[in-house]
Image 1: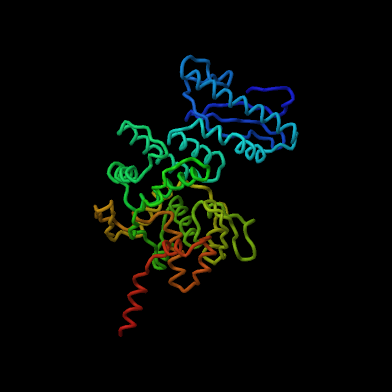
Image 2: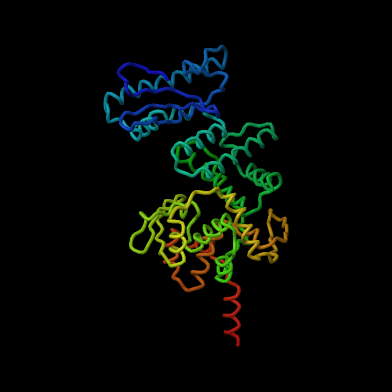
Length: 408
């Protein structure tokens, strides 16, 4: 790592190339005792990067000119750091650096990146390094970026932000439906992530084709299932081996708390306030207030509140296993829409039950039992009534009985 000048100590800094070709600025801050990272937004072919000098290589021709320009910007980082060090001394923090670097280098960075892929690389890098979203979220952005690169290769074209017009999005939607076999509901969510990227571009004053604002995908009613009280009773009384029993109990904790597995796997006695568990959702940052009902408390005490983190895919495999044992094997007809095309599939119910079914089950049963919507939303950390309605499944037995009684 390079030490630019003796008076920087202990503010050691250097430039490092990521696999994507984006150049990172890294510095050890004595005020925080950690390496702070900042994406310069500058991109270079790894073959043109010198790891020893942490600068672009000296080359001839057009690439040499580009390398010299990048070197000038990197040297300016050292100069800006020197000025900030004089002002803040040991009080220099990562927040101050990010604010000043954003202000100083924003225009320079924008001039050095031009293609849509360049902007996507910068956007994803910032998402990762700011830790503002979970891993599965920035991976969704990466998959969108990969799709754009596939389309570039197919069409033998390099996309720029202004190329994302209506015609592009029609082709993109068609690509996702035919090549990626993405149903309309999944595509609607993916398009939302794409728009988040373009909104970020707008906020950063990058010139964007505004056509994306009018692109919409019609959502379709889904076949997400929720379990009934009878189903839960069957699961509770299943005779299972120790391994499968653990996963069954973990799933039931989700049903009794209404939380995502990423949250209830973090339950700890320190979160208890009175007879309520108060925890901030990992995904949204929203607080949930979970009453310690007897069924939930019994299972948490059974495992001494030690619920280890589990891979969601592995968890879903185990859920399918014990739900099959429970006899949840009646056939469900599932429809998927791909624009004007519809596919129909017959599938046993247990294959539709997954980790998120637990949260949906809690909300559906609470609604059926007459728990006020506002109370359920506070328990689950849900902010909008629309989100609540997406979770709440129709209890056909209750609906049928109510209609029969009304017309008897």
